[in-house]
Amino acid sequence: MDVIEVAKRMNHRINALEKARDNLQSLASLKAESIALYEKVLAVTIIKIKNGMEVELNERHIVNPPVTIMEKIAKGICWEEKLAMEKAEAMYKAEVVSVTALVAELNGYQSINKYLSEV
Image 1 (spheres, rainbow, N blue to C red):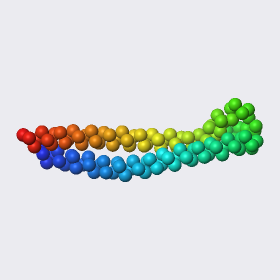
Image 2 (image 1 turned 90 degrees about the horizontal axis):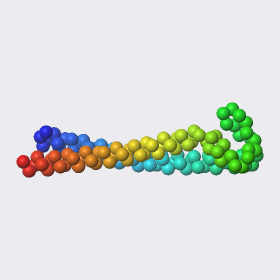
Image 3 (image 1 turned 180 degrees about the vertical axis):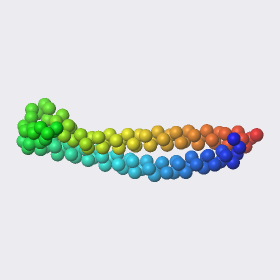
């Protein structure tokens, strides 16, 4: 590998880091919004159940369930929001790992570049 090739690869990693940084911000926002939405929908569902409103889960109508299982039922009803929240969190974590890998690669190329410039 020559100095020019190392410089190209370093530049490629720097560009990828810039894109990842921007993507990380939007994924962080998506993660926060999905968590907030899930918490809101869950709270509204618990209030509906507690106030005696009929709710539906897997095509079954539920009215006045025992208090001990009310939260579990509400979580089951809000499964789609929970799924969206988990996906958003996973995408955010994957991007963080990707950024870490890019930084490690860039550090490696910097070391190679230093070695090549000393030779």
